[in-house]
Image (cartoon, rainbow, N blue to C red; front, side):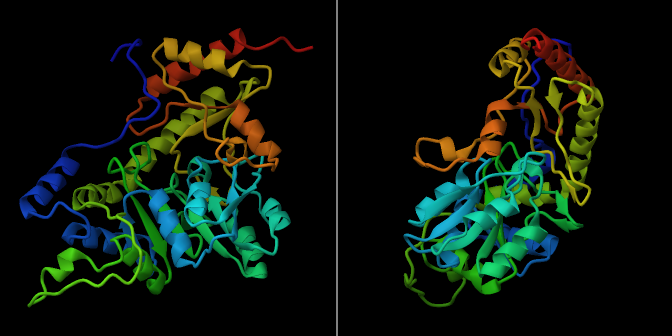
Length: 382
């Protein structure tokens, strides 16, 4: 690899073991969802996370939607959601006919601010969706205290946080309901996919039924003697994860430690190289939690022209991105709320390459190019 080869922002860690698992599914004759590999993967998830139920679905957005339906969210209800994130939580609230209310985030971690949540609770509030922002768990001790005090549900959007921990417990199992993503840029991936995790087997059963058009799995029915005729008791959705993806995820789940170890080493090197740069701030990880490093976001000094820095990096073949979104300013929501911390992060954060296939030489190349671009595109101090 030369010093001019492209360095992508993200890259999935998939290889021969995953291909072999897919070949086994092809040979089995059941590539669709809720088959033997999907069932086995759900058992593996439940054991890994120590939860009562796990439901494998097409993506984290589907898991969030199913969670809200299973929790009884009704049209007109209000659900408080983290503002600085991909807007899947707010979308899911809209899917249920409810109203998303955006909570600002903490400036040091970018995770939902428990005090902002408490300040937003009103007569129509039924629950809260917290987000483990780009892989860093939120403050669940405080969030559970707030939601418990007011009788609200709490859902953990751990889409980016597979492998992260909070007070020694795994992200995804930090609230009564957790939702995971296996999208191609996550730490473990099947290209697309997700899961709902819960301590409540009844809630898991509700989500599983709704994920399959409102009927029991066809694979199970095919093994019943006679001619079972499914009965539709709920309006469901086609949110099933294929057995092909489930087989890939069985391999990937076993590789979490290996892949996370690589990302941790890369993040540590970035911190060494960029920690003293006055024109940016590196990510902050509180001592009571660990980061999954799905993304590595730096906050640029307001004097820096972020777009110009990004153009310089991309001209050198270095991938970069804006970070994530301040949802309350997106036109689809037409929100009159203000979330100043989230808005500031949305304007000034920059994502730089982070994935388990990066080399240390590439991290050094990215860091050097970024520091040079910062100085070129920073306004002089007054």
